[in-house]
Amino acid sequence: MPGPKVEPVENSPALPEQVDVVIIGGGIAGVSAALELVERGMTVALCEKGQIGAEQSSRNWGWVRLTHRDPREMPLMIESVRLWKSMDERTGQKTGYVQCGATYTVTSDAALAYEKRSAEELQSYQIPAKVLSPEEVKEAFPDFDLGIKGALHNPHDGRAEPQSAAPAIARAVLRNGGTVHQNCAVRTLETVDGKVSAVVTEHGRIKCDAVLVAGGVWSRLFLGNLGIELPQLWTKGNVQRIDPVPDGPEGTLKHPEFAMRKRADGGYTIASATPSRYQLTPDSFRLFFKFLPTLKNEWRSLSLGIGPAFFEALRMPRRWTAQDVTPFEKNRILDPVPDTSLLDKALATLKEFYAPFKDAKIAQRWAGYIDVMPDVIPVISDTSGVKNGIQGLFVATGFSGHGFGLGTGAGRLAADLITGQGPCVDPTPFRLSRFSDGSKISPMGGILQR
Image (cartoon, rainbow, N blue to C red; front, side):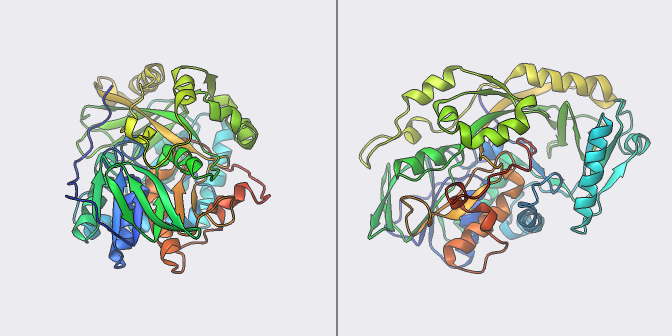
């Protein structure tokens, strides 16, 4: 089933012979890092095996939220929101960012108590979040007829357009002197004395001093070929969009059964508010003990099974040379089949209890794979301190369903690390070495809170 149509980005005519930095992956984190670097005067080549933004970065909910963030992510998310607010002006493009506010409804006393604590946490960052009574929710969302206990409202949460944002930023990279190479998979790196010296792509070699791997669900496979362990798994999110709805709300809304946001085209993106049925892969067993704390947190909302994905992963090569055709060239754009039963349930609940949507018509459905770390926060890091680490090799991956909103700040932090400038936030929580240096790995947030 074809995924959402992503805005096109012009391809640079040829590979450069040499640049300062090569970025692998054209999602929101990769393009944001590229823009940061070219604006600082560095030469950058952005290599994407498929199309800019065509996998995770165009398939998510489109939320840009401060609410329900892991405390370790919060400083970076505050920076991300600051960057989102100026991104249209900075790029001269429309990313669709709007600070529209978000409302998180609850149907139990326990959930309401949790949201009261969430409001207090947000208020500690001078964010004016508050808990709403059912009557106040009704006032904000007329004709909303679910039996709710209340809601958390954060006026500083927002939204942007996933099919527009990464391409808009990539076009700004081009205008600022960077190069963009789509359908150009990076196969591997070359090193001299333990330092990055070049990348080898399917179309040729690019000399460089630094590389950022921002490959989303593909990052583990790429790094594994270099002998670097990244304990990352992937799960699937399911999304649908509906045709424009007269008198629909501007603010985003989350309920235990669904999540919704208004789109720039007047329609709405509607998703199931719970993770999908998780398809086991060989890596699920290899990384079982690392993910056990997360599994204990998420087991109520996960349904495990073995399907075609297991055998596809089993057949996929895990080692190759610069001369080999890689899995990245054989899988340009991951386009999984959506779980229609979850989407049916989400839309049916919305139609039943929210009058403006009772005649909503489905325009499109899709799914996307999400990269997940054991502690459900990303890796934004160099590779020093880990086995087989390479000087000049950096990573930005594992955003665990939180990455669209976080991507602008992640790009800035990655650029800070690459250039050696003072980081915009403390990078310690995001270091790759936390999985091998004896640190306690403890998930504080959830997956798919997008």
